[in-house]
Image (tube, rainbow, N blue to C red):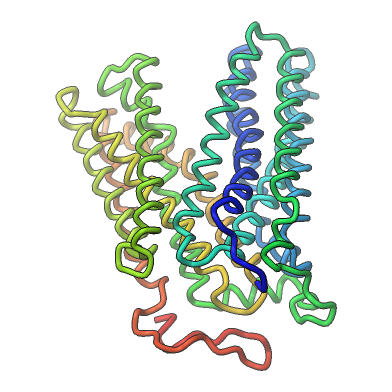
Length: 450
């Protein structure tokens, strides 16, 4: 980076891409899901499988990251990914409408659409993080992670509210028009937001003779996987995100079955959790920025602390299962949201901080590897969480004991993730910068990968 690092306005501009991405995704994974099941009376496994497909495709994130590394610029991959996502979002809406009259043909079209939704999310999302990693000053990475992810959540919220308003009274035609409008506006917002950002921070395409352009993908991936730090962080992301996502599909049924919450009350409980997540994210971003260079500004501290705190929060929910209605469930869920938010934003900030550690010009492959681990975890998390609760109920004979067991197992996963995180970060004893050898490989400083 030869220009000035991105300041707050530049970070917000990149965050708008995440807002646009979230706007399209929330319609495809939430609104279309409901229409398939409620309006068209299709089995819930159909939208569930389609959402799982869009996660599964994202195991290809390292390949897309390698393509961005070879070109040396992220903007074409972000815009290209957003274009694919926008067209696929429209295609998914058309497929959903088609299911009402030609179910088999509609499902077939939806499979294609959700496949490319995964392609678009993976290509654009990976390159956004790489762009931030390359262009944001290290002292601002916690704030950048907070801003970008908060803006994505804002994209979820605003789109859900506005689209919900515009979809009433519901009709298939209105669904296609609203989905198409959101997709087109989101794509245009992403293009305008990114215009000139890379040029301003001095990111330029790599020279034609650069080794990064000539290295095949498999060799580049092998190089990154051979780096102990990258490999350990990928395992950490997989385990921690599995714990993070496994609670998603069982929290509301748990509230209904154990605490006798109505559907409206359990939905509001989910809102309390998301409020906690936002507060946790914003809190870490603010403290991390104000305490940059000190212990409280360390993403290592917040990542490990967030995992441990999330584990104890889940132990609280496990206890709530056994105690029953007298337990302050709303408070426990709010605390769980805060600890999850603190962990999540710290982990994302860590991704940006560690993306440039290792072989030179491999940020895209590295970020893609971690993004693939996250996608696998999210794809498995909801399914394994529900499966574990069903299996535990079958063997233990009680839903209360089953939920207590599953929450306790998720807590163990977070504690394991915290232990894994201790081995990810460079030692504090590092006193000299990394050296670059003749083959452009970064040699880690003394004890950096211990």
